[in-house]
Length: 76
Image (cartoon, rainbow, N blue to C red; front, side):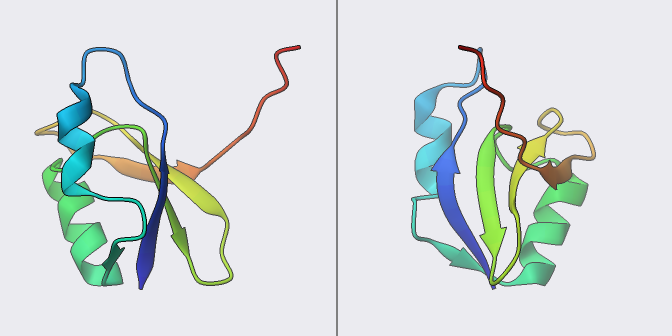
């Protein structure tokens, strides 16, 4: 199972788009893979598999998306 753990909103994507993926929601791995292949997840959605690294959805709606390891940068 994949858990929705946070949002990293992307400019131009309405916040309402993220509400279909409420924090704490769980999705089967296969469903997340299919949604990424079909480009149906909001970019910036942060996901985590059990015992895995947090990952973020990158790419545009309607195009093949990827789920990449989340990198936290120190900007201070």
